[in-house]
Image (cartoon, rainbow, N blue to C red; front, side, top):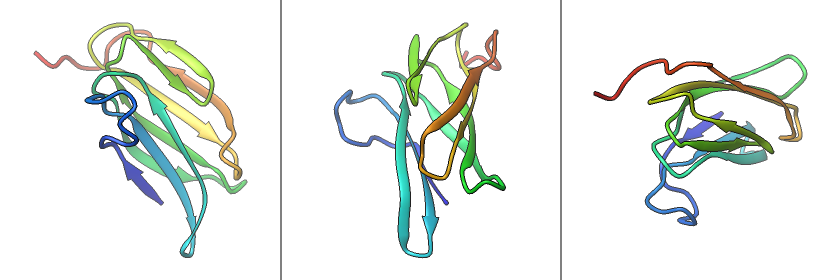
Length: 104
């Protein structure tokens, strides 16, 4: 599995967006991106029994999208959990209802 929380695509530069990939040997099964226009990152990705992944991280963007699920930030950094199936389709995504830590 690969987690890349750096700049990808440059479409919302200098925003940091998230990328999660499930690797099968050297073949990428899927790649998805999520987040918004601020400092957003994945901190952990784990495979689940059905062949997909659950990703955990934080987002600071006022609005962030994870597989079609749009979330509003509750404050500074909010926690996010994101579950995808083996094809990379979002099964669910959820965020904390208050900031998990402050950058100040």
